[in-house]
Length: 154
Image (cartoon, rainbow, N blue to C red; front, side):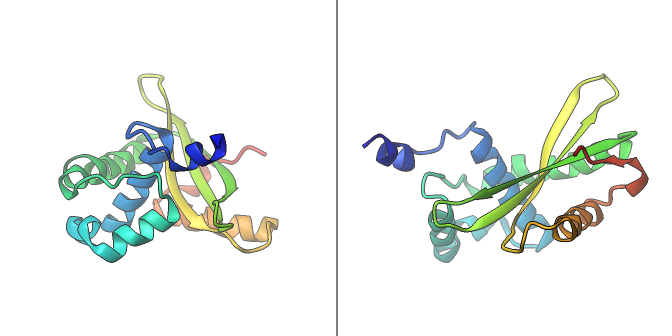
């Protein structure tokens, strides 16, 4: 019974998971030049509900005024960072789909630690160094990170 309730209780809007999904949808909109109204499309809503039934999709206005603008501020912060570290987290959804999330960490000029999810991708390949390297290099290229300023903790 407790497992059922955990799987059907809506995600709080301020949760880390909700923020990560919002950001992923914002990246989808920005990188694939999709309109904000895509979040109102029946097919899109059905797909998101299949992937995470507990997630409530915010309005197109929320993405236009909050999520997508923050993406561009992050790019500016990354350009200003003297060095960054990347970490990964591999996880499996309840429907047995495997994913990998790439997170960037850096210290801002005011000495505040910053952590941002750069991307979450399907990761059905074997977990080899080569495949992991490919995922990380794609993230580095897509976010225009300078390779000489990147550290990857092991």
